[in-house]
Length: 312
Image 1: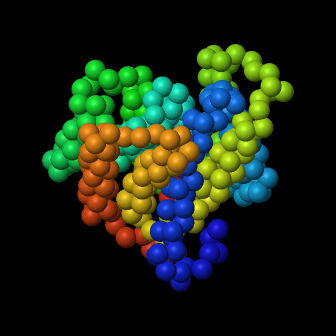
Image 2: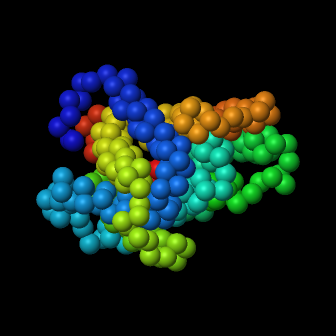
Image 3: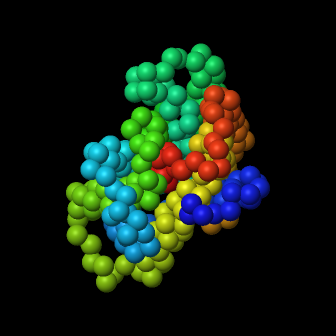
C-alpha cells in the first residue's frame, strides 16, 4: 500500500472513501434483509473470523514483523470499542429501520469532540454545541415528533455511535505510530472473539447447515467488501488525506443507507422523518467541517495513522 503513486489526484482518494461508504451504507440494508437467513451475532462472528483470515493470508508477514508488544494493550482497547460499535449497530438493525439506524449510527463525529476533552485533554470548543443542538432536533423529528418512540433500536444505534467515538478518540490518543495492518488485524480478531461471545450469550449454538445461502453470501459481502477491501481503501486514502477530510466523506454513508433501504427494503420516510434525517446529516457535516478546519494537512508521504481503521 505504501508504494501507491502519491501523484494521484485527491479526487481519486475521495472516490475510494466514497466507495467505502457505499459498501457500508448498502451493508446496513442487506444485513437487515439477511437476518432472516442468519442470526445477527453469528453473522458478525463469521464475518470477523473470515476477515481475520483474509488479513493474515494477505499481510501475515507484515503483521508479524511489525506488531510490537507495546501496541497490544492499546490496540485491544481500541478493538473492544470497535466490537461494541458493531454489536450495538447490528442490534439496532433488528429493532428499527435501516434508514433510522444509518443516520443515528453516523453521529460519532458529533460525539467524538466531547470525548476528546477528558481523554485527550482538549478544551471545549463552544462551536461543537451547535451540531449537537441540530442533531437533537433531528432525532426528535426522525422519531416522529416525540421521543416516546425512541425505542431499543434507536438506543442501540446511538450506543454504536458512542462506541465508535471512543474508538476514534482512543486511536488518536494511543496509536498514532501503529501500523495500520497491525491494527486492522487485531481489530478483526478481537471483534471475532467479542461477537462470538455475544452470539453464544444471546443466540446459542446455531445449526450451520440450516443457514440459507443468502446468509453465507451476506457474511462473504461483509467480510470481503465491507471489512477487508473497505479497510484497504481507507488506509490507502488516509495516506494522502486527513482523517478530518475522511470524516466529512463518511457523512455520505447514511445517505447510501437510506437509498439502498428504499430500493432493497422498501422503507419509506414521512416528511417529518425526512426533515429529521436532513438535520442529522447537516449536524454531522457541520461537526466534520469544524474538525477539518482544526486538522493539519497530511503530507502524502506520511504513513497512515491508526484512525484509519474505523468501525463499520
